[in-house]
Length: 286
Image: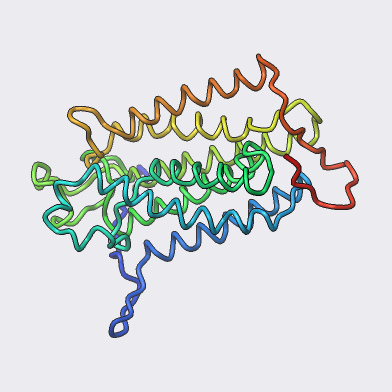
C-alpha cells in the first residue's frame, strides 16, 4: 500500500465573534515573532551579548519588516491592487513577500547597530536562526489561505485547492504541490544547519567568524527558494522573470561574497565567545 496524505485547508479564519475575526495568518505571524525573539535572546546569552538588545531590536524589526514585506508584494502586484486600493493594507488576507521583509529588517538592523554601537554582523548572526524558524512557521499561513501552492500533481502528499482559489488556466485541476510544506521543511533543515554551526562555533573558539551564520542563512534559504519557486503558480513576476528566483540567486552570490570576505581576506570582526568562557557581565561591544 502506497502512503498517501491529502492536504486540505480548513480556511483562513479561526473564529469570528461579531466584528472580531481571528485569522490563522495573523496568529502564525505573531507566534513566529514571539518564538523567534525567545530563540534570539537565548543565542545572545550564549555569545555573551545582552539579550535585552534583541528585545529592543525585535520591535524595530516588526515595525520595519512587516510593512516592507507588504509594500514589496503590492508593488509587484500593483495592477491588481490599483483596482481595489482598500486591500493594500489588508495584510490579514495574505500577500507578503519575505524578501521585502529581509530588506526592511536589514535596513532597520544596520541603523539599530549604529545607534547601539554593536556589530551588525553579530546581530545578523543572532537573528538569522530566528528568521528562518519564523519563515518555517509563517509558510503555514499560506496553507490556511490556500495560496502559494504549486503546479498540479497526483503525488501522495497532494494539496486540494478549492475552485475559488485556483488560477483560471488550472481550473480543471483539483490537486497541487504543497509548496508551503516544501519550503517549511526546507527552512527547518536550514535552521538545524545554522544552529549546528552556531554551537560548533562556541566550542571552536575563533574558528567561526561572526557573520558566518548570516551568510549561510542567505545561501541555504535561497537555494531552497530557487527550486521551490519553479513549482509555484502564483510567483511575483517582472516581465517573464520570476522575481523570487532572481533575488534568491543574488542572495546566494552575496552570501558567498560575505564568506570570502570573512575568511579569505581575514576581516577583523568580533570574536565568537566560547560557551566555556566566564563573563561577569553581558557585552555589546562594537
